[in-house]
Image (tube, rainbow, N blue to C red; front, side):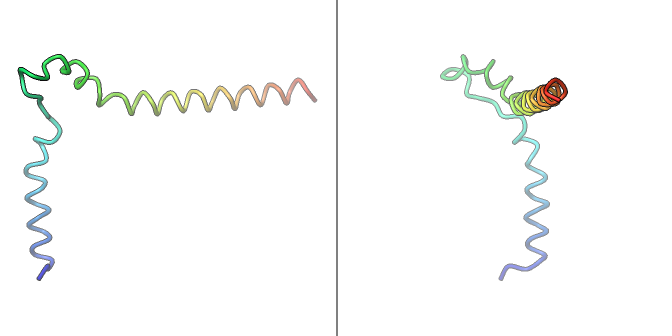
Amino acid sequence: MFNIFSFICICLNSTLYSSSFFFAKLPDEAYAFFNPIVDVMPVIPVLYFSLSLCLASCFKFSIKMKSLFNS
């Protein structure tokens, strides 16, 4: 039966081994040419989010400028 004690043990066990999840390594021989791509991949969501904020602010600014010139 699944109880709260086993749930706590599972959570503690997963947090102990989660540090190896963040530092993944590819096998040396077969995938060595993917290493630069793997190094850059964690930054991609940050760049995507900053690009979306920049585009949203640019469009908001252009809509404000159009309303100023049209009135």
